[in-house]
Image (cartoon, rainbow, N blue to C red; front, side, top):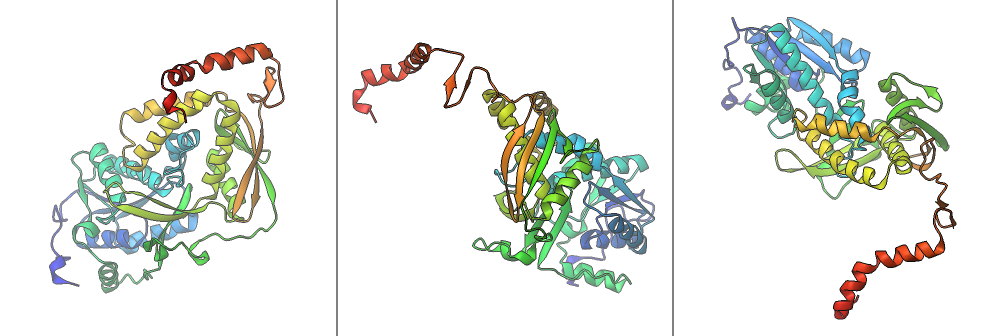
Length: 414
């Protein structure tokens, strides 16, 4: 290792005699290094994996085994998947939230709830510090630090990878030298898998002129046929998929993901502004979010008034931005959630989508609150709620401001 990195110098608190340190443990290289390094420095390490739906049972089992091999005194899994749905995903569906009209704020929104779970656990056990493995060049450091500062005031924050500017190779060398020989080979792409999508970084994405090749994606086309997907909503929440009822909304999302992933639906790349001010580019595959949001948006077109849609879109855009930029704890967020919830009172019915390899299209809806079924008239066909003379009078009155303006400024006629 480079000597100027001071990797073996004592850490804040000097380990021995200090209270428990909670490590936000994902099982990846950075957090594995953090657990071992802190344990070797004499800290009482509690490795906590906050699961928001992105870990399989086998991954959680492996995380537990590795945490103890790395020197943790205790390992816990904090399952906050249902909380994540109730306090975030539900409102992102209500708001049809897509950052830059593209990205369903996938793993980035999960980080907030992982941080909240870690902060709660740290307070519960009386931890003296919380550690995470974020670097100094990304958004996650802000999501973790801000949440910890607000929810666990006075608890120190330790970030070895960021503070010591450690390279992957330095961390691998340290683990190997201390008997932990797990394979952390540098891959071309890095992945963050979550219930609301998988983000993909690295590789061709570092070149603005290139897109991701087929092999970069984790899910590939396994169905070549076309099929219909029917998603039923009550007050904006999913209650059935293809007629099968679901009380567990997370299970409903997973069912839709299974259907869409077989067609490799939901692939795209997002370019946007990071919290720290630089541009960022991320690839993703998110079948369930894309299908759910577009189905929900289509149902709203039939069941909401023009101004309900307009104002809901305005606040939903802010909701998504605040969530992405680590402002979930901002007091205005419950106010926005209240408005989004109120807007869903008539969003009932089934949205029908046609799925095909790498894409889908909206077909229609079946809703008891369908405003298209008006007795006042059929668009482009026949009016029933007004006469032709009333229509001509409405048009003439509506044109008054323009007739006034151009009557005085005829030279500006277009």
